[in-house]
Length: 320
Image 1 (cartoon, one colour):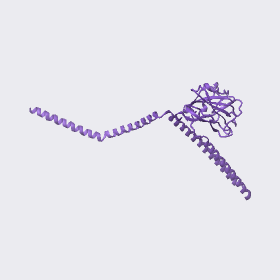
Image 2 (cartoon, one colour; image 1 turned 90 degrees about the vertical axis):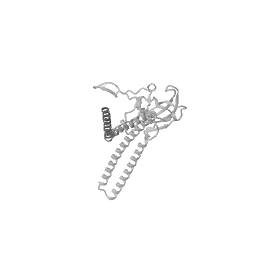
Image 3 (cartoon, one colour; image 1 turned 90 degrees about the horizontal axis):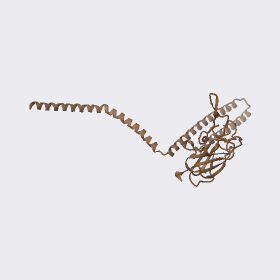
Image 4 (tube, one colour; image 1 turned 180 degrees about the horizontal axis):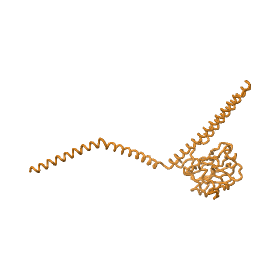
């Protein structure tokens, strides 16, 4: 009986000791190691939780919103490049004008003649600066049409080759392999759906008349179109006789294979701004997915016509 009582007492003491040691260890772990581990774990969870939230937000974002964001980003990038280029031109011109003015003042001339020369030089400088400011504003505002382009390739627009004229075959444009000409290179017609407008970056077709069928990024009721070409100042040939002159625009019904609706006929004036927007003369009765551009004449080039960029503006079907 006594032996069993000692066993019970000894077991109670051992259990109490283990409990006390376990409690102390738990308190030590809680105060030292676990809080840091938990903080690190919480940071990782928060970090990936934020990424997961952004990913889910992108998934929930509509395709139109994603396309709009891409288009706005590209537009801002283009504006930034143009502004940097214009700033460089301003710096160069200001340096040249300063050198001209300093050189004129360093000449030893009679007082009266020198005063007349200085006044003439000031007038010239004022005129040059005025012309420069006018050019910068015209260039900067030229692409500020503030209209969505539904014929933009990066937004989902494309060319239907079955309804498009053949490309101009230029024997000088060849692809070579180890010095051997493999085949002629032709600029694809979807070049006109992209904002990269530099000399030579155009789609050409033979002669002065041709057509191109465009599948828009989404259904719209077209309201206006924009034609863009390079200026004679930046043309390597010194002229833009291959630029389109008279052109017409048609809407195409029934998935780009149906009836054509005449929307308007216009003239691209090469003497005016490089970017020209035209309001359509006729309104479509319903939303259209396809638009046909018909070139009727160019500015005199006998071999081909070159298109740089064509835009289509309108009201999305969601708002009609």
